[in-house]
Length: 441
Image (cartoon, rainbow, N blue to C red; front, side, top):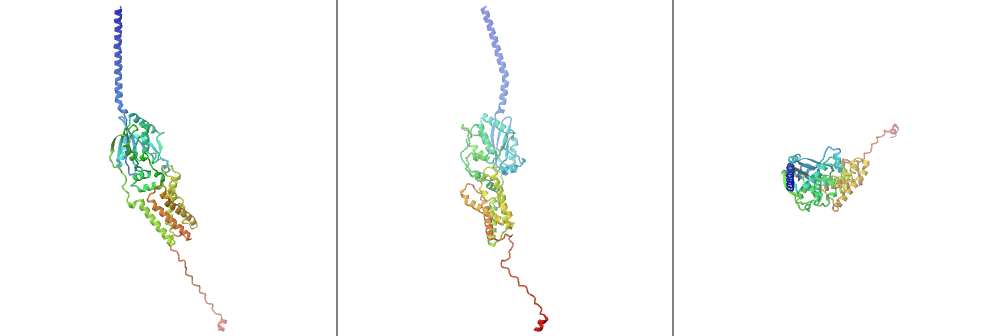
């Protein structure tokens, strides 16, 4: 019995073992296709993140280039662009001048991105970032969330919050720490960096130098210099992660193009300095002529003060109402003043010449003070501005001197000589003698 029972138990255990093995084998076999399917889908989840740098173009807004992020896998190839804006938005120009321009982040296929830069002939460089997969996925999640309609708009700032600075911040956030960029400075200030990229556009740079004040001339850190995409690309090639990994894994040129697809250099006879010198020469010649001859060429004074007043409106608006970077303080408000618009009108009204005289004194003293103070303050001037200031000073001095001697402002017509020839005395007709008088004779 015992032997029989033990054999029965043994057979039961053997059957149970075989059944367990079969069940395990079946479950293993059933799970194998799922594992193979996951293995087949794994490449779709492997992300490659790149920094795209587009070299300068001929348009003013493209003089410093552009930066974007490329994220690709086996299933997608996308570009994330912080440089989108809409000219058709209401009051776009006014809001741009005031510093309230809104830009947007947008994500779209890479195939839509490259043709624009190929067409204009700009060089495009791709730097593959040495992200780990968790860092790459963290960045992609952040970009997708930020590109939602309720999150995509941001207040653009030319030097502090643009397409390059936003990319730097998002990469730092994905990495969990600040990327270590090289510590050298190439330009030192915003203004010097802008002038390097605006070299072939002297009139554009003149406008910047008039409108933006001493904030552009403060010392920059090496990281702040990367607001220009080309500088970001150069420093990124030598950067490292905090753990010592190289920041860039590989570099590839997507479009050869030209490094500077901009306009050719401006001829010397079309530069602001040349034409400012011409204007100064005319103004000084008119001032000397008026002082020596006692004339007052109202048309010259009126036109020049009209231009100074219009420029003053722009400079004062930027200094006191705009939120643009570095528009205030601006030393140019002392000689580019809207008050000169008044003098451009009152010079034609004889009974208001005393008002014109007061404004001429204000303009002359303000310009003279700036010329004296300039070496002792931080704001850097454009060379073309000095001749214009000299013209303003000469015209103000000439008018003030003319008014001081009490001459009447005319349109430079020849005046009669002071000593007038007296009219000859009228001849008195002789009275005829009477008959009695003739008899007496």
